Length: 234
Image (cartoon, rainbow, N blue to C red; front, side, top):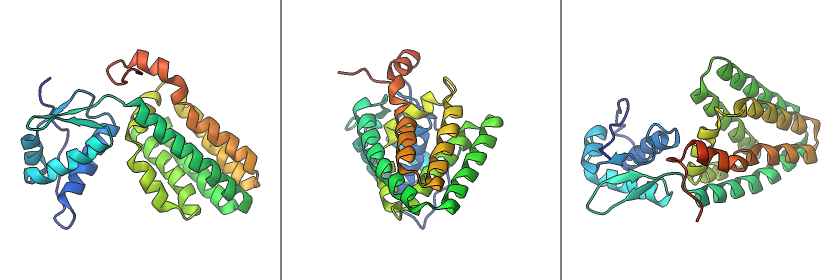
């Protein structure tokens, strides 16, 4: 496959780590599927695009390789990987385990102000869906979950979980336009928010379990529809 041209433009912030900015930008392009599996990334081309030396590009690609988002071939180009299901399952297990405990604690606090903030985010998501803006829909989706972690004073844990969820996020992006998935997300978010506001920990956990398990339950359908995106199970 030929080298893949990166979409858009990039402006380097000289006050921040160049390697971190390269990593963040490339990861966003991969997770949002702007860079599809099989896309070949040349170190020299990337250095030109980001206006940096090859060293921060190499460091960024090594980090993406650790997350199983790319394959790095020494002395050669780098290729975007198909979705690694083992990585996706591990990320799902961690996130489900954490969020079940998280919403249990938040519901026991019975915080109507938190519930109101969460329902406001659901309204914003609904507006995004109504105008067909799935990118903004996904951004608000992330904000909904981050709000839960912030409320539990676990923002750092949210960041660590996000770092390892690239393959799971790609599966969720593939799933989002299918089978009324986006509408289901709205309903599930609203139910989680209401359960927290009502102080019903068991109900909040039940909806979190349903909410976070939907995409992995559709693996066969996703693999059939997107054979170039999802690696087979070994």
